[in-house]
Length: 255
Image (cartoon, rainbow, N blue to C red; front, top):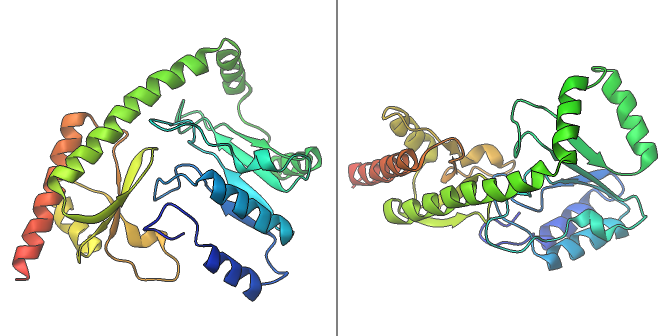
């Protein structure tokens, strides 16, 4: 992923496909509210990505784990909607991120024969999710409560998202920030080692996820992912302010 633009790096994708031609069995992608960037791929990128994988006979696992957390833009179709009856996309999701965190229930949309295989694999690990939990969830969805709930949490988390972004703009001197929705923001800071920043912020009671853990081939030590879902607005502002102040302190100490 090209992190300073809201699109895929297709040149890199094509180079990888050529390098490992015939060896790649599937690809995994989160096109909506990617973790850690929070960006949403455009319809054009989804079309292009799907067609490239189809041409190379590579299956796609599409993760829609929190794409319901849509705050301001229109919903963009999932990649699986392009596949028709080709069985080239496995579409997965979860209720744990958007509904009940303690209820570890997800879902898979795909070819029936594949689903049967996956059921067998799951049974070799554990028999099934609790019947009681599944029954409660079924009744909840059947009574249209889920749609009403989604409207509430979009506003609830959307307000937090916008507030966190406002606080970041006010307190943090960053190079750029990514995030179109979801439950976190992803920052690239200006010449700041976020591991060292985390150490200093931890001493003040604030933590975040250093961004280097999300990179495979590069030592990117000036990124950070900032989550806000479990915090109240006063806590969000206090934490972001501390991060900003700590960045300023670090910069002054090296002058």
